[in-house]
Image (cartoon, rainbow, N blue to C red):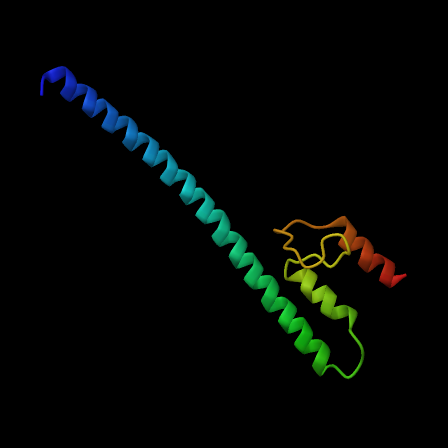
Amino acid sequence: MDREKLFLHIQQLERNIKMMDSEVQTLKELTVKLVEENVSLELEKENYEQLLNDKETADSPFKENSLKSLYDEGFHVCSIHFGTHRHGDDCLFCQAFFNERQS
């Protein structure tokens, strides 16, 4: 094998390695997003199960303070985004829901 073919082969290998590295980076980013989504869904599930348990053990019908505690834990209680994680942001729809209940 002459030098030129050898260098061409090495260049091709370098391109292949760069492409594989790019694909690995893309997979890592996707994996991080999926893990974050999974954690969020697990939290939502736990909160929902706790909410159901609270509802079953309560003497009276569903209590508004259960919704308030769910909101305080970082989840939406408004009809638009109910049960999804708020990611620390306040929601005007949820706050309007609580204001409406106080009136």
